[in-house]
Image (cartoon, rainbow, N blue to C red; front, side, top):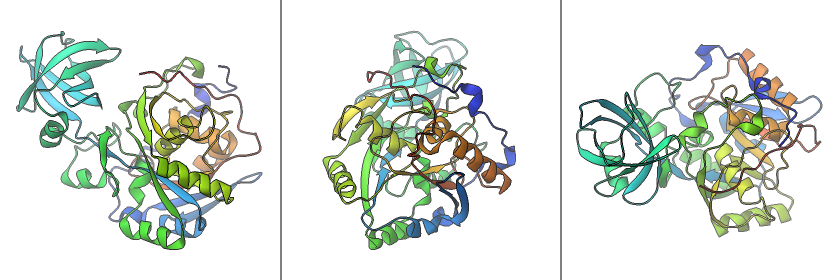
Length: 360
């Protein structure tokens, strides 16, 4: 698939002190950069709670209700060698796919003792991941013995506060290894204010994989391979979105993960309920089918997420918005501030988007 853009078009200089290392005392205390579409776009510096003014009764906000697993483990091989394991995906109640860091690659059939609590059997390799067989219910062992996997750019080990604040207040479906971070700004009072205004709250589930932090390494974007992620769209959400669009209202994705789930489920026609794997890679020129507006945090240079927002609001608009955010000292990444974007309908966002086949 041809794109007018290459990897270096999505690089930018970020002062390291703008990478938020800790959450703010209040979830909804963040700032919100409202990007007002136009030629050129306008930038309004707001408080996150102003989002209530910026949406309309009858709009639907779609949240990702995935719950972050305590997916990180330290362990030892039978030889005594140290191992770090990051569960990428739960396959069933006994088996997972995981990244395994060790000085020597573990062999199929060998055992690793995790958290000095239980042993897992190493299975076959699947690309960069290993299958691991747990001795009992996977979710129970992860919850009891694992550590929360904070993103690589957060420099402290996860604390009890992180275990609370790196989950959304509405998280309920365990399976992610990274939080859908746009949702971290919403607390119960803010959700209540949105409901009282007449905004419909709807949910999807997309289990965010560790690949969300992987920078793209190929200058030619068509050569980048997305990790697959599992998503579910309930019929109730499809109905709410259909009703909003029929009434001329907006569908607002809270986070790029909600966006990817909705767009993946509307690739072959109208939005459909169900569950599937997605490897959807959105680059400028992609034609959005379902989402009208997007609440999102500020993303890493050279990341697939920066490409997605550039596709959504226009490459030049996003470049200008990031310059503005850096000049105004917004906080970046998972614990940082947010922006509210509107879909670019001028066709100015660039070349074609790419859709990889949906298979695990």
